[in-house]
Length: 393
Image 1 (cartoon, one colour):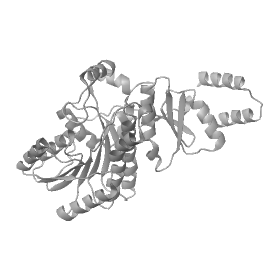
Image 2: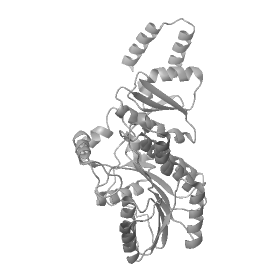
Image 3: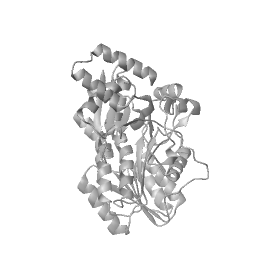
Image 4: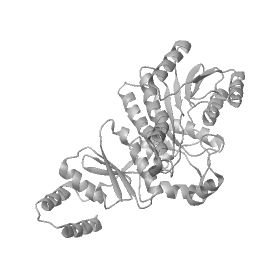
């Protein structure tokens, strides 16, 4: 079964992009199901028909974009950064908001920020009350000289976010940066997920992000870092909703950076696709971890490597980056494959590679569509023409 989802390619098309990650996850859960997410800047009837038919011949290509009659496919390339190219985002007397800040990953970065800058203010947020262990960790941060507070806030609630941002600015005079790490998982196969489960997973990452962006649109932020997941890029069995939420964050980073260029927002936005960490974030069963290492060469990320990766990504000037640790050769083969080449992300362009030369032009397919509609061409003749055309391409 092939499911094709088509979205208009416009300034806000990214609001649909999470559906691509949901389709990737469906494919992993049900190998006989294929999904394609296709963006088009021109969805005129005839063009739409022949493009969809043509893409059905390549069902394993999950993300396609048509822009100005050119066809692009999604891909990754390795981001090369020298060890000297590190950007420390936090500064003396800076004020920073960490959503999900009392979680294990949030506290890892809070500790790193305090270790780099003593005179710093951190506002950690979460939906739950602090445990005794979390209270102890926050006390240690304060003992290092930092001002640290914890606010019990549900970022999926718009009014709560507005009140939080207004309170921070009123109390501290500014807000310099945001690390958005709030998120939850409700693992089960897509066919079994309920509406309530979907909303509980989507809300903190999707609505939470939108609310934070709206509440800070007039504040001169230095950065807005989004803690996404490789599930958003690759899909993950049992996490179709989590994958979709993270993919939305990835697309939103590009969208928000576009608003920064228009002077409608402030601060660099980066979405980081994190893997599983050894000491923070989501965890997995030991048998599953071993299976991942054997199949894809992926290991759990060590804390020092993860922190350094964020500094390197901040130096690269990209909207989105995926972090992996493990067997380098296996990881390259799995992600940066020759089947799906990509441009160098350091150029600042799309993570999409033009493959227009592999396809007959639009006029050719439009002519075929008209012949089919008029009855001049049978389905058998069309199949033969497309076969020959593909061989020539």
